[in-house]
Amino acid sequence: AAADEILATALPSAEAAAEFFRVLRPDGQVAVATGDQDPTGPALNLDAREVERLFAEAGFTAVTVAVAEGRLAVAARKP
Image (cartoon, rainbow, N blue to C red; front, top):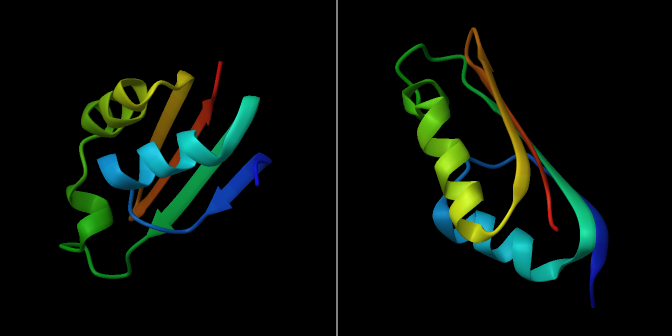
C-alpha cells in the first residue's frame, strides 16, 4: 500500500525518514510534529540542520524544519 500524505507525531530519525519515503507515492508529502514539555527533552536536542539532512538523505526534497519553544516540525516532499 502507498500513501499520498503522512502526518506523524514521532521524533525524526533516519529510520523514520526512510520508512516515510518507502510508503509515500511519488509527489507525496510528509509532515512530522513533535514537542517536549521538558526543556532537556529529545525534541529540543535535535539540530534543525541534522533533521533536514536525515530527510534529504532519505530522498526527500523541499525539506523544511521549524523549531520553537519545545516543538519541532518537519515538512518534506517525495519527488
